[in-house]
Image (cartoon, rainbow, N blue to C red; front, side):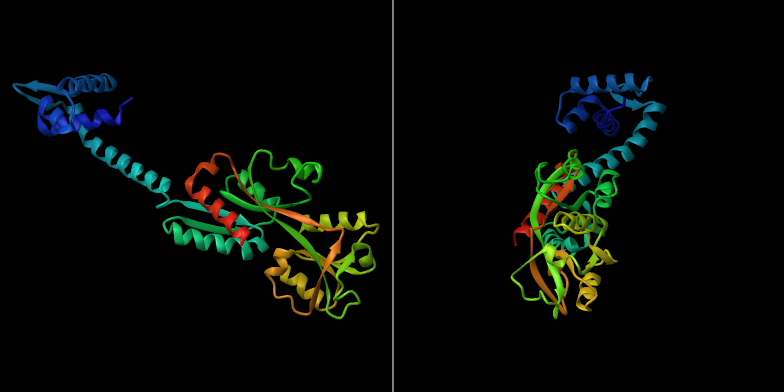
Length: 305
């Protein structure tokens, strides 16, 4: 293989006309220049230099290699500078995917901090609920995924599927998001300190995303009833609007309620307490990329504010 260091020596010899002058220019010894030129000729499989008196001249092959060396070394220098910029957070990109309530609460604070601290880093955002967001991460369509799962962070508290679904990923816990009940303002339970899920057994329900919907059914069945779901939507403002219009009740994460103007709705604490774990996910190799690591750190800070 032709090495970049050999090409640099060849260019110096071609430019100065001798091994000794090239050595002075490169800051090394004349024998070192001679040795590297021998190694380059062995790699090329043909002579590159001929001695003409005291001067070294290029052969036809040597001339061709010097001509290509300029572009090769320029490209290598540009690559080294770009990598150094990325490593120093002067450049780079992060592709972030987040669920909607995370996009409207945690993400803006984190991205504003990234722009202020590292203006050369470009961050893109798309929205997807888990498990689709996690699939995107594994498929290489994003670098970071903001996701959630219900139950405890430990396998004992989470469902079997959820407990092991992130084993191959770097999991950075951000916060625990409690679910709250939503009832219309004129509802008989509006203003109550706490409401047992069983007290809502006869109510029509508005359900959220598929994962939230599945968990709602599990919680209600644990309280002794199967919810009658009249409406289902992934759009949190739509859930709030339907409840506010008196069309049913719902439970939503506090992050979602925080991100929506809850007009005509009363929030109540529900029992048993229902929580979801909000995390940032990435792949082990990506976690070592400076821009990704910095974005992870800003998401952690945003979660504590």
